[in-house]
Image (cartoon, rainbow, N blue to C red; front, top):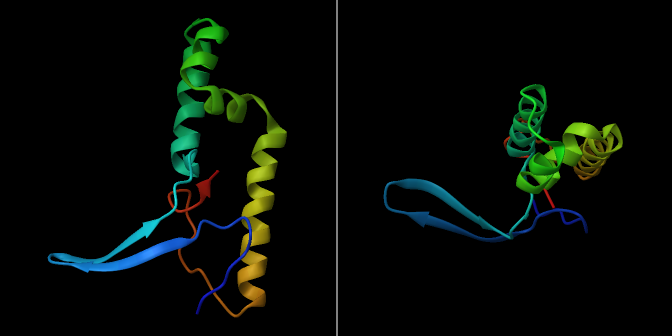
Length: 106
């Protein structure tokens, strides 16, 4: 079933390769996964707790810094994920494996 929404990361092609069941090539989501963003935010929080200058941490992990310090950014991610699931459900698609690893941010 193909479902397309403007904010979704679209699949470019599917490939079968020797030794690999399925390889999915997708467009780049430059912020990576929610999992990696949470990791950056944890590094920022740890750095702040260790007394590192906030300006240094902001330069090192600008998106992680914003994600760690701004609840509105976090809520925007949750709202986007919920809207995507609602859209899928309206089109008869069930995800079944929603994790921070497969929520891609752009």
